[in-house]
Image (tube, rainbow, N blue to C red; front, top):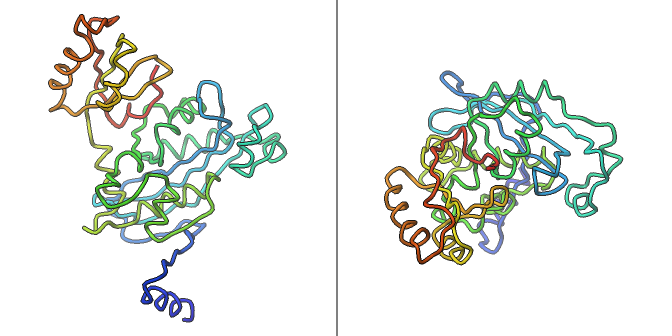
Length: 294
């Protein structure tokens, strides 16, 4: 085949990188034996802005898949996507990014019943930026609150695997693929392609995402930390949660005692003028991770 011959020639030359367009089947398809597999769902949203408290979903895309204990995707469902009218004009920047207009969204709505049924059928929800998508989805579809989520951006050690950055589009380029970004359906298919990718040890990206979903740990909130401790907290790995006005981070079981001691010395000692006696610590797992924290 001429295309394959050209690809081999370009790769053999050494001066070129060949990228393949993401082109998953648009119908339900089996990719291997499905006995003993589980159902997952990949998800992406387009929204009117970045704040789930004040912004809204304008596009929701879902696609179910079946996966094995080793992270192999063995079946794909048909893709589903819905547009929704947010009830107010789009910011021009959002229109440029998503290629959606007010006219495209006028009168459109997400099929709540279908979306909820698809999500409730899955044992794991995967997004590339779950910390962003999950709060929007649970606000719009409260019936799916509490499902198990994982994240292909945060649960994979991309740098350790030799990849630069964590943006979906750039990761796919490094894996040998390209696609048209910033429509939810395209992003979902791109994510599925990324989940199928194998690292040098032959493990799939999905196997790392599934392992991340099995993690349990502790969400540590540095409640009442003085403003002057922000740089120390940031260096320690804490992030600022604007909704609750707290610095927080997740730590593993075996590191909790060390974290409490660090906070005692670096945040809650009297010389640092804390406004609380100590941190708040809550158990966290795939059912609670990436939710909007109040």
